[in-house]
Image (cartoon, rainbow, N blue to C red; front, side, top):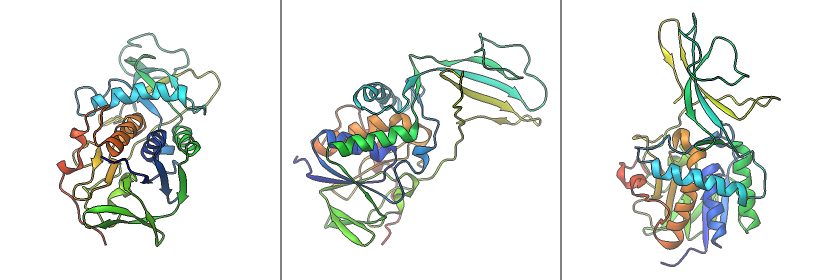
Length: 303
């Protein structure tokens, strides 16, 4: 397989940034196209939480473990400080009315007070970590640009094909030629014209990040019960598994999206594996078969 000379990555969220970074490291010319700004959507607003083993016993488990290790490597390799840190993670329990029976199940961090109790430990500095999501995404884009990648602002409208082979994209009416195209636009991915892709849906989530003196590196997951007994707990594609790999029926077209709440965690593994697939014809770092877009029925082709 001949490695592509020029790859267009559509989307400057964390997936597009990671793909661009690992392609640029391999000497591929990359153009990242983004309609608004780097990390302008979910990639700039998540909690940046990373976990080694929370996806174990699922199809995503090997990808998550690879990505957790790559996050540690990137923190050493990328010159920008984007807030990578290891942390302890706890489960808290609280009630809208009344107190949770009993006290803390394990020793509680001293900064936690009020009626909530610490119900258990979910992770340690060996298994959980955090990044500042917008800074991390921007750092990957900047590192790719230092290796020659280009960031271009514009709206990706159509993936252009000649026969069954991708030849580029149209951006604001202008044709940009490319040997390969990567779609990494989150829930907007399936709106691009010219390709038949499975449906991709947005997923609402909530996180609160505290930036204050005296708050240590801790993550808290809350089990909160309303007065009527309902539980509010934190936590896509139609089957909840990411789309990573070749777009069926269009040689040179690839997709990286649908990661749900684990996008920030799994971006490095996704970027590395997709860069391997694009340049070598096979992903060597992790098996991408569970994420093959061909497993789901395609949606309509927009023209």
